[in-house]
Image 1 (tube, one colour):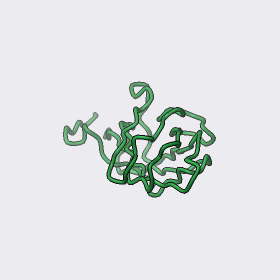
Image 2 (tube, helix red, strand yellow):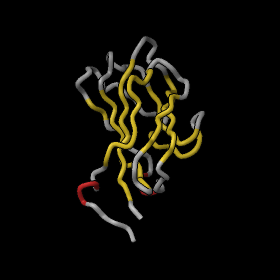
Image 3 (cartoon, one colour):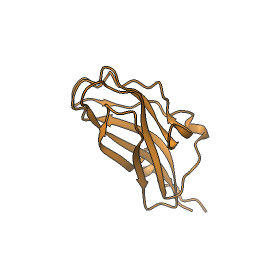
Image 4 (cartoon, rainbow, N blue to C red):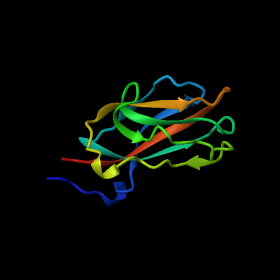
Amino acid sequence: MTVYNPQRALGVLIGSLIGANFNSTADQQITITHPYSKVQIQSIRVTNASTSLTTAAGGIYTGASKSGTTIIAASQVYSALTASNLVLTPPVSSPASLTAFDNTLTLYFSLTTAQGATATADIYVFGIPFEF
C-alpha cells in the first residue's frame, strides 16, 4: 500500500552538488540519497553562482557521458544566474516519464559549453517520495 503524505507532495531535498564546476565539461556526480523506498525526481534548483554564468550550458543525466535518461536538457543555459542570490529552476525533461528510483542513485551534471573562466554554483535535487 502506498502512503501519501501531502507535506512531501511538493518535494524533499534528495541530493546536491555544492560548488559544481561550471567551467568544465567533465561529468560531475550528484549522489542521490534518501530514506524512502522510492522517489521520483521532481525539480532541480541551481543557485549561489560565483560569477555571472553568461556562457555555461548543459544538462543532468542518469548515466555518465550524457547517457541514460535526460533529467535536464543539454541545451539548458544558466545565464539567468547573474548574482549569487538568484535561483534557477530549469525544466525537468519529461517528468511524467521519469520512473521512481531506488534510494541510491547517481546523477551526472555535464556541461555542453563551459563558462570559459572559473565559475561555480550549487545544484539541489528535489523529489517526491513514495513509501511502499
